[in-house]
Amino acid sequence: MPKSLVVLSLKLNQQNNLVMTNFGCHGAGLGLRTPHLREVLRDNPDVPWFEVHICNYLGGGLSKALLEEINERYTLSFHGVNLNLAGIEPFDPDYLKRLKEAVDSLNPAMVSEHACFTAINGVHFHDLMPVPFTKQAVLHLSERISMIQDLLGRQILIENLSRYYRYDESEMSEGAFIAEVSERSDCGLLLDLNNAYVNQCNLGESITGFMAELPLDRVAEIHLAGFTEQDGQLIDTHGSAVSEEVWQAFRLFNQLEPDVPALIEWDNNLPEFSVLMEQRQQAQNILDEYSRVKEAG
Image (tube, rainbow, N blue to C red; front, side, top):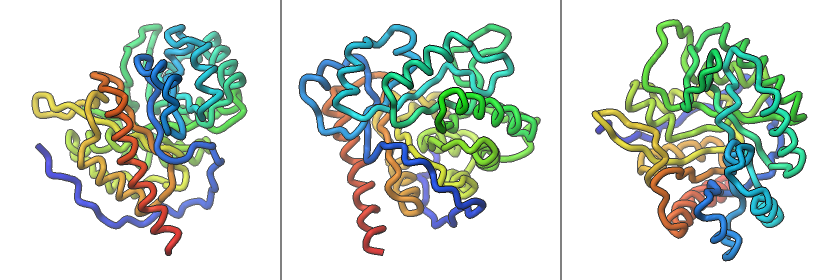
């Protein structure tokens, strides 16, 4: 196994003075998963916000009535995987129409997508495919992000991926690529620390170096998740508890940019809801610790 992440001091990227939109989420939230829906409605757990896989909702896999009821009680965030944001084909007009209707109806605090493509020539991969980090890809992705933001009338967040190979065509690092895309399109960032750690272990790409290249003032959400080790590689499965290395990375981020909302993302091998609540509390404790440090300083 790779060595644990060593917490290092970083300097914030000062390329811009953007103050991000107040997206309305605070503290540590949870991903809302169907097996836990009725438990959430019955017990009203102390969770400040829930993230919804909006593709499941738009595809009919999540009850509109139940989601509306939860939306009355909790702040929601929409997280998507089907937009094909970096694809080369036109956006699916039916999907965009339904997405906008859902955003207008439920008014989520945040809307996020992945900086990737998921289909080409009409073939859907059912996976998140990274793009080469080139100037051409920066322009292409930025333009498509701007189109979505114009349609929705709000900023969106783009998320970094777990990757298992490199493109020979890449001209820059992932951090530099995401920074340039976010500044050109004026979008926010969803920083997935588990994905960054997976890339550090599999590809030798330093998680601290990655964060050092990002405009951290654009980061409006953090994802914390678990991985699986398989044949000497780490796989971003979202099927286990957050690792100690990712918790360390989360502490590092909070040293630099405290009070950014964080999400426990657990999709597979779902545990009891109480386990998710324990993970959420661990994240909240770290947020509270560094918030106090910020106030004292």
